[in-house]
Length: 249
Ligand SMILES: NC(=O)c1ccc[n+]([C@@H]2O[C@H](COP(=O)([O-])OP(=O)(O)OC[C@H]3O[C@@H](n4cnc5c(N)ncnc54)[C@H](OP(=O)(O)O)[C@@H]3O)[C@@H](O)[C@H]2O)c1
Image (tube, rainbow, N blue to C red; front, top):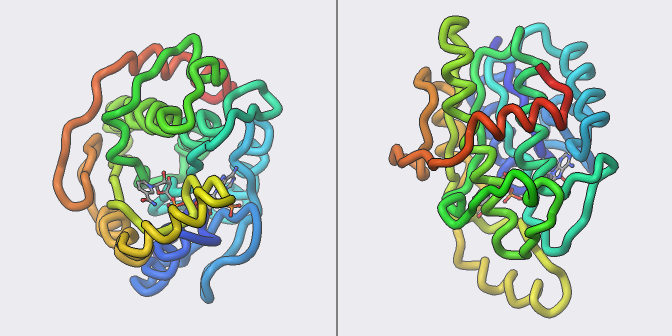
C-alpha cells in the first residue's frame, strides 16, 4: 500500500485531500497541529511554526513512515497581522516557505514525490531577502504572495537536486476555494465568509492536488490543471538563506 503524508489535514483543502487519498487506497497520514483528521487517516501531531518544531515533526514522520510515496505540503497561512516565530521569522515565511524546505531535506531519503500546494497569487509577490523573512516589509495583502513566491522559486531547484535519485516535485494552485484561509475575524471576516459562499468547495480544490499525487513529472507549476509559468527570482540565494535559517541539509 502506498503512503501519503499531508500537512494541515485537519480542515480546509488538506482535509479534503486526505479524504480523496484514502479513497484512492493510500495509507494516509495527516500532520495535524489541532483537532483531528477524516476517518481512516492516521494523525501525526506536528507544528510547522519554527525550526525546532519542524525538526521534531520530521523525527515523528521518520518513526511513522519507512517510505513516503507522496508528501503533500498543504498547510499554509495568510497572515493578517505581523507575528514572529521563536526564531524571529515572520510566521507565514516560516510556515509557507521554510517548513516545506526543511521537511524536504529532512525526509529526502524516504520521499518519492512531493506535491507543493502553491497559490496563483505568487504573481503578486516579490521577495526581498533582507526584509521579507523578518516581516520588515510586512503587508497584510502582499506578504502571503511573497511567501508563496519564495516557496515556488525553490521547486525547480529541488527537481534538479533530486533528478538522479528519481524523486519528483511539482507545485499546484488549487483554485479559489471556500476555506478559512486569511479570515481576519470580526465584521470583515463575516463579510468575507459571505463572499466565499460562491467559491469552490475544498473537495474541488483537492482534485488537482490529488491528480498530481499520481503524476511523475517534476519541476513544474500547475494553475489547477494547466501547466503555468514558474517565477523569476533569486532562487539560489533563497536556497542558501533557507539552509542557514533552518540548519537543514
Ligand atoms: N483557499 C484558497 O483559495 C487557496 C488558494 C490558493 C492556495 N491555497 C493554499 O492551500 C493550502 C491550504 O489552505 P486552505 O485554504 O485549506 O486554508 P485553511 O483552511 O486556513 O487551512 C490551513 C491549514 O494549515 C494548517 N497550518 C497552519 N499553520 C500551521 C502550523 N504552524 N503547523 C501545522 N499546520 C498549520 C492549519 O492547521 P490549524 O487548524 O492548526 O491552524 C490548517 O490545517 C495553503 O497552502 C494555501 O496557501 C488556498
